[in-house]
Image (cartoon, rainbow, N blue to C red):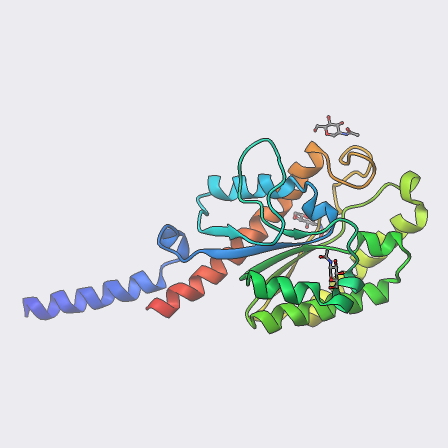
Length: 245
Ligand SMILES: *[C@@H]1O[C@H](CO)[C@@H](O)[C@H](O)[C@H]1NC(C)=O
Ligand SMILES: *[C@@H]1O[C@H](CO)[C@@H](O)[C@H](O)[C@H]1NC(C)=O
Ligand SMILES: CC(=O)N[C@H]1CO[C@H](CO)[C@@H](O)[C@@H]1O
């Protein structure tokens, strides 16, 4: 009797442990690989990634490995800053050249954080062509991993006095188009989560020269990415936990 009830209790405990939210298992959770992907706003120096990494560690989300062929630029403290943010990059050139596919093979991630398209807009690519490139890139991400968690940022505004009003309007149009695009392309096993880095971001006060975020811009971007990144990491580690159960 006693033994049976102990066994029953153990069985019930195991079920409870497997059902526990992953916060309680984070230390033991498998490392989740995260690839920041885009152009210079992501990569050079992209110190919002340093703040995001720091905020994740502070929040106890330590099972992270940021991956990519770019090493961490100096942001004043040491952090895990590997990324695929390449200065001057265009979404449609990434598609044409297959760069992302190469990088996904080199360092396969579980989560991608993407901010991409500013250079396309400055070089007068249409909203429709950028959205077409996004769809192709998401296809490449899912070929790498069918359950890829994809976090896509609305573009931060760029200064009309530096880049022209057409560029500001292009960012607004692309950000608007992202809503329908994300809805149409999200999948339950591979969600596309939009992060709105446009709202509340000031192209004059929050950038160095009308384009790249300064200290206040980096803080705003890190804050906006934090919760979606935590959710993506947890959804990957929850699936891994379930595999163990
Ligand atoms: C992308 O691939 C093309 C073709 O291989 C190459 O010329 C280019 O340098 C790559 N871009 C980056 C940012 O590595
Ligand atoms: C850049 O960031 C600093 C620090 O947050 C802020 O004081 C400054 O006004 C910002 N803007 C410019 C254009 O430097
Ligand atoms: C309009 C819009 O989507 N605003 C969002 C901006 O970002 C913050 C934080 O990520 C959200 O709370 C807002 O809803």
